[in-house]
Length: 462
Image (cartoon, rainbow, N blue to C red; front, side, top):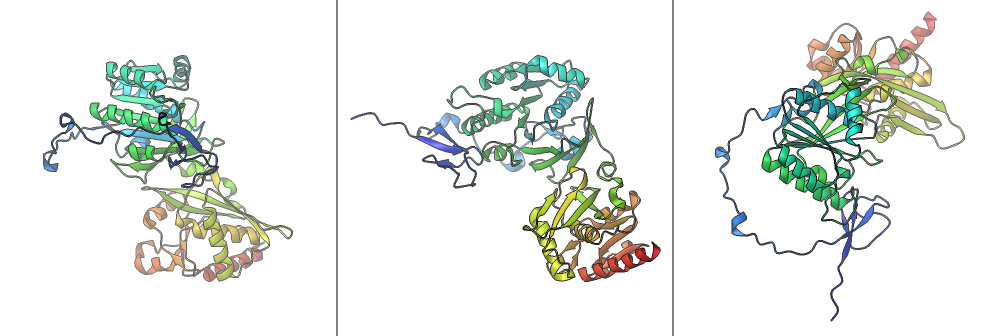
């Protein structure tokens, strides 16, 4: 009898789903041309020897260190992490190329090195000389900062074992290779196995580890979804390369909040925290038609954003609906509500909505600002100076409350904007917000009547 032929499987590099044969798209996530052939794992006995079994520990008897967090030296990063890096934590930092991931990591390594912490920075994409050039540009120094240009995981872990650093950085996880596997670096099997071995190494030595990850063209971290489940913290570094600011957003954090963000400005000497984000997100275009201000909440931090809209006639093709920084489905919903509840016909118009400065947000508090910006563009009339809209819009055209309303109103006042549009319910539930120039509305028809009254008054002035 001939030897049994080894069976291969096909893994989706987007979601990690297994297939028995190759096909054009993944049946789990729907991605096309993402299946990669891997050797099927051999079946091994699940029995564990008695020497590998540990006794369980009572929860009340577990001892933890109260000084297990280490501040990075960058206040914005520490806020997103929940107070600093946790001892033994596995952190995954993802972001598009050119966002400044390596720059941010190198700055953190330098600050920790200045505190006397041992740091091992492993680069699989740059040589040690290239990292040194970037460090000189950033004016980064550190007597305890070690560089290693290597991609073999066994060699990397051997160096880390000998140095015994406080922080291990791998830039990036997609370049690391496990020699036992035949697949190329960055494949599903390589990323999964590399992360698992790094996790075992870090947990047994209480070694804080940062993994830099690539992202797909859809903006998600490349590799199997299992990668994000294995790590303790997932951070997303995002922004627009045409602008100077960057956002560090927490997507997962086992040791702190997941709704905080850090705002940075990219300068010649590296990333600098931004104390007043509103100064970067607002422009002078608020005095033109099609613009309205609002306040979004990212974690506990409110900051001003400018909603811009452009409505153009289209009598020849199917009308376009384009949203930059907003959910396109949310924009379509709001335009449908405007047609039904306000009588604004948009069936023959192209509608473009943008959050100025490359900001991205799904905050429902932007609903009223989007509607007013679209209405302002249709009528070609500038909104009253200093107008800020803070309300969610329901399908019935009603104005709904948004979270952290007091913080949003306070931020608008601090930036010098006092004409604030709020839901009618605030007038009955929060007397402290009933201030001069604060207007209250119950439904979208009330918004239209207010706008038309202002439009007529503005025409009389002109």
